[in-house]
Amino acid sequence: MKLTVTTFLSPEWGPTTVLTGDVPAAVADLKRQPGRELQVHGSGGLVRTLHEHDLVDEYRLLVFPVVVGEGRRLFPDRGVATGLALVDSRTTGSGVAIHVYRPTGRSEFGRVEL
Image (cartoon, rainbow, N blue to C red; front, side, top):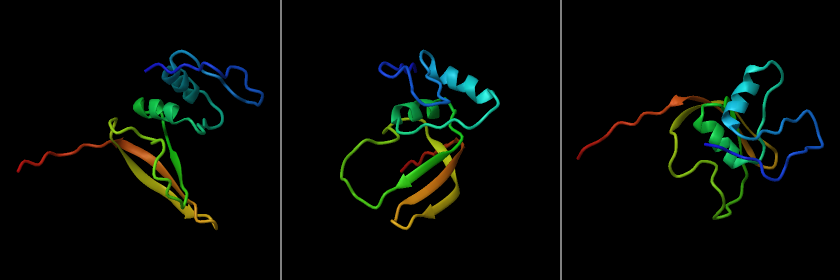
């Protein structure tokens, strides 16, 4: 999958790396370099792309105590099934649940015939 940045090419904060072209290959290259962690904030499309290429080491999911009834999904209806291990969980004073998961590999499901 090719993900292309079309509107944001000159960030005003640093250190920031803007990726274009083959984003999964560029992220894999960044992960091999020494330095601080890579983070994705607010881009479900990028997270899905990185997930499909096994480039996500940890998910930090925040669950807010509100039901909106609709909205965007982080993961699509169809996609790569991956097991997750809970490594941390806490709740803020306002009721936001923060869960930290690490991928454990592809999930396999058996078939049941009736």
